[in-house]
Picture 1 (cartoon, one colour):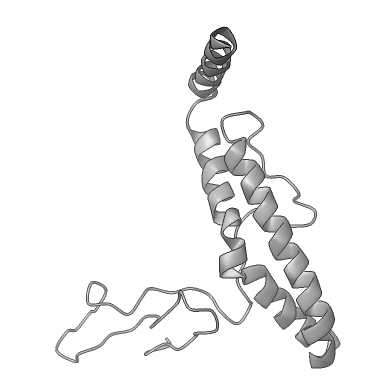
Picture 2 (cartoon, rainbow, N blue to C red):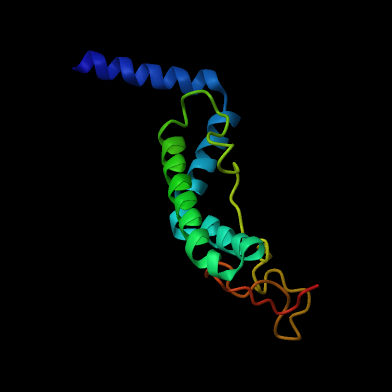
Length: 146
């Protein structure tokens, strides 16, 4: 038992040191990002919005929802796979025919800077530009939209 644990740990260590840093780091980051898709529901919102634009609102709330839910679940499991296998080569994204490698947002929403005093150009006004609550789904209010 101890010999097999030693062998497994030495293989993992050798894999980590021989692979370099950029590949495993990108795979792990992409995996964590995709793993939390079920919380963020970006694919679901995007698919519902795109289906509403192409096929109409009746189809968006039924077929678009189901398709978006399937994509969110798929992205979550792909993220779990990439987190578990990040030290093992190949570091290319998986399922690229079905999912884009990076996170997606609905076409009507692109994240912006958070409205905070750190990014405020003029604090004498009391507020500045930026997203008010980008972490809340459906919140797209911006103070200033340039």
